Length: 91
Image 1: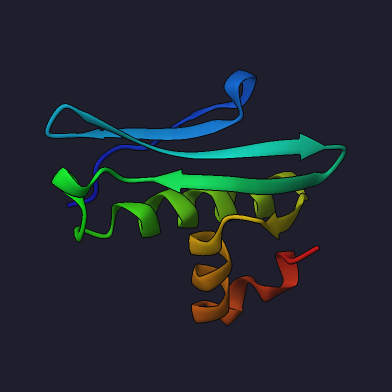
Image 2: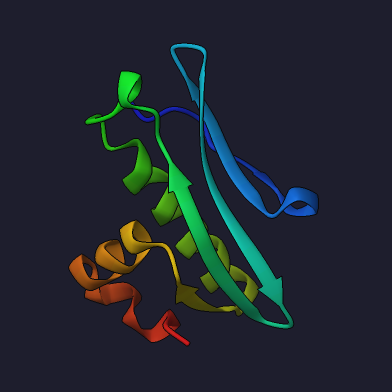
């Protein structure tokens, strides 16, 4: 079961807590373009698909809001390459 992911638009962040540890995806928003700047999942909770869940939630939010995406974060870029169904979001 995936942990609940909270979107905090005022902080431009998607966040979840796993075993009490914060995991985040940060982005910038300029007009209708979301630039994913970094994804952080500490090693203590890594390997559980948390970064993928954060990224999918961010991409689903971008689609729902009509945003395009610049995956400046290397993880987000690799994730988008592995998930061509989100290719239409790429700015």
